[in-house]
Amino acid sequence: MSRTSRIALLFGITTTLGCTRPDGPAPLIVGHGGAGEGGASPLNSLAGVKEAWALGADGVELDVQLSSDGQLFCFHPQFVKPEPGTSGFVNARSAEELASLGLAPLTTLLSTDTSGARLFILDCKLFAAGEWSTYLDSFAASLGRTVQAHHLQGRVYVECRSTEFLDRVRERVSDVRVCYYADRMEEAMPTALEHRYGGITVPIGAANELSVRHARSQGLHVAVFGVQDRFAHHRAWSLAVDQVQTDDLGFAVGWR
Image (cartoon, rainbow, N blue to C red; front, side, top):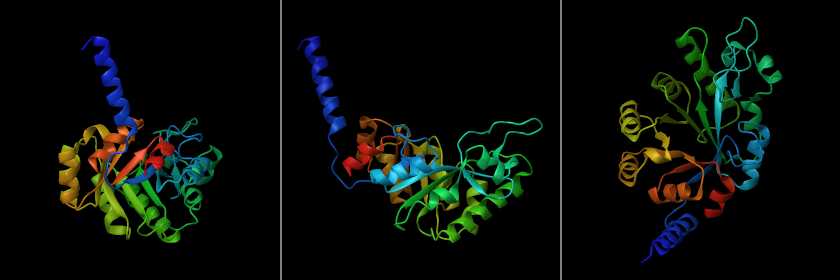
């Protein structure tokens, strides 16, 4: 076989794999930041969440931070625009100040779900000024109040890299799934099992069939992120993960 023929064959195989949905049940389809990087709306925005529902997402993943007066806002970066004499941390600003800077209150985005069935995956970003333990307590307490006020029991996943924070959430917030977020399966699984969490969240490239099967056999819900193209979607389905946090929501929903 000539080199040109081999290249054509390889291209045909990879194209077919990327377009053909693997057998087996579909995972939960969750839009990253709303409708994902490939969506028409900004991440962590009201428009992005509405776009996700219009596309048929099972849920949305949102980056959540705490204001100085105990309100939750959707924002990913470590700093907001700093003012003279301020640290730039979200938790150094009041809810009024954050809203004036264009940050979306979590309660506003939660209110978009009128079905009572969609999922909210809250990726809690712990960037803080001030006393650490008090900050974690306040963040967990605010989550608890929000879940209760919006009747979200059973529909919220809280993920974070900090076991200090997740332990507080598990102890103080009723009926939410607590998930440990890590870059490697080798860290994620033992940590989640040691702390009795309900799940793990890892990059798609860190997971393989054996590790996913083992995690699920231990009762862990497995979510993957960084799923951006059709080949990554094919891999996620093939691994039989429980949840895909996708940046191409239209494509993922079309495979369900």
